[in-house]
Image (cartoon, rainbow, N blue to C red):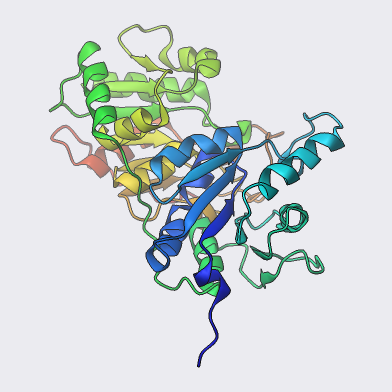
Length: 364
């Protein structure tokens, strides 16, 4: 008689992913693999405040715990050991059978695993490069740094016995959100049958942002070619967004969309133009053409779009990948002419007014 796989037998799992919303979206295929093999398993996501928003797009998540973790903090949290004990208690109260700790190539799973150990979780799995003793009960090693994050997540769950994996990103968008976006676009003069370019100039790291002045040039070039367009971001990015629009009221700014509405807008768009950030992954999940202005902070193989029609624009530099939050030398990796960006958009969308220029996937 074959032994029962304790992971497949688990009915109450904690999935840990404490980065941004795009990172949570990329956990989707791994969570889908778990639910496919164990449909009765309840999955709780432990996520950061920013990442937790994406949980609404992933139907395999049953509940969410939101926490700003000290091991993912950039120095903003105060010294407060009692707070960390509260996290252990919060997790312990849920009596999880196991914890699957998803991390990037540069992150350790061992701190989260130790928290889960102290919270009484008997099964703890993660992918690691360094020695962490017995903090992990199941440790996966040897995954290449160049591996795409979706595949990294899938490697982990496959090692646990959840073998029915599919790397395609998938999200659930409510019909109400699609209808809300249709109304918002109608209010700014964009009909449902018109093409639409979505420009998203922001990113969590400054080193991943295409210069705002050049983004503004892209917007003006598109307008001159008859493209309806919108510029998206958060309200705290308003100054950046207004820099892109140049105060032109004819270019709508959308800063108040829910995550579901934002996903619906991405799905509605004819093309998305953004950096290595959330809308790139949403476009990949909705099969929306995407022009990714991909800085040299990370390898394209680690995070780039894979399923959707795409053009990835980047200048080769000796310093890439730098994994920096800011660039001290003026972002030479994003020295992309706005005309080239527009050519990439029009080549992807194949609309009647397109340019015949074929942009390079990765420019030298």
